[in-house]
Length: 543
Image (cartoon, rainbow, N blue to C red; front, side, top):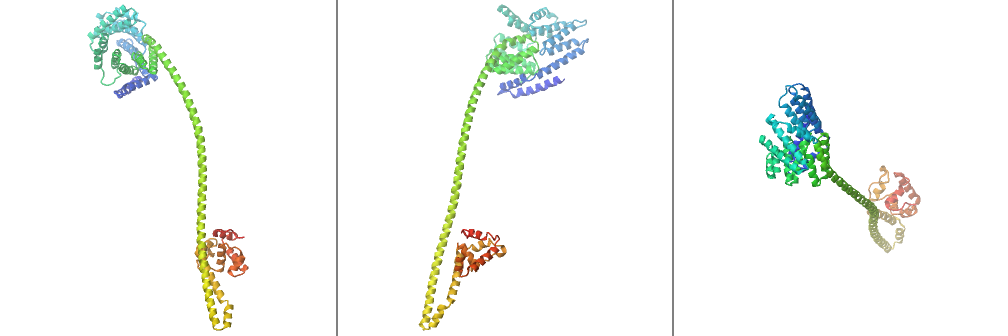
């Protein structure tokens, strides 16, 4: 049962593949499918053997019953394409049953006809087959049995004609085969394979082609009848020297044989020969060896003899192809080694070049960074120079305005003294000269001018100082400085010595020292305050 299910599934799959490969690319697809069947572990043969074993068990269960004879012949038929030894066992069992009392009159003739057919298929028992064949009386046969008898006559005398080395005997055997062929067609005119053979032997290949093509199934089929049409159609194309068409139909026929699990077939070895002619040595080698293995497994000596004719030429061609292939592989390996060496050398050189380029790029990057840093430094220097130029201009302008202011004040003071002197009041002149009122007023005005000029030059002074002081000690924005702010304004200008600051502010050095101490105490970082302040002003830390 399992074997039948497997065979049905395999047949359905193969039919789908065959239908899909009709048209363009049919041959390549069919050969690819056949490759798979040839390479697989003979599952189809196992399924066919299971089916035949089932028929053998059925015959055994009918032992001693009227149905045993037909059951034994059915079992023999089931094994005829798988194992001729087992087919012979069941044929001999059928012959034994046909001799039993009460057996059907024609059963003995049918059993002997089956035995003669097996002997002919086996190959080495042509003499025994001929003896049985010639001893049979057609008058005792019904029409179906007589048709089988004539078919056997065609097969038997065609085999004798092919093997005979005597041309006269060969011609005689061919005439006998032709006569039996005519007898078959007289009984059954629709035997298309035999009719096509008659056209071929008479040289009418066009008629044979027309007849066979008319019997082609509408779609690719795996049935034994379709396989026979494919095979004989391929034979016609071979005689017409149309090798591609012959290969296509032999492939379809071989697909049918292998999918049904047959071991005793003709298509695959003939296909191997045509593929060898076309140069497809690898397929020819695999197909002929599969055919030889199946012929040995089925004990079909006739097929083994045919394989013995094909094997040497195919094996020699395969060995030559393998030798050329090995030479190509060796040459390709050598070429690959050379190319690999060249690639490795090129890789090393490229890697070295890349390393040099990378080092050059890194050097350029460093140079670029240095240039950028120099550019930034130059930009900063330019800004400082521009700032210093602006400060100098404002210094010069303020100095000139201050000088002009003092010249005017001196002129005004001189005029006032001259006015007093004109009145002849020498005491008043002396009192005016000795009075500090004018000096104090000018000093106060000088400091106011200093404060305004300083803030115009350094508007961020108060903010910079506040950034170093504790929040609660910050100074508010102002236009007039206290003494301590003037001390740090002078330090901002680079006047760091307490003595110089004291002379400028007209106070003692101790006063300057006390103010500086108080300012440090108000700073967030007392010890580093004046250094940080000098850094903000752009001057070095004071000594």
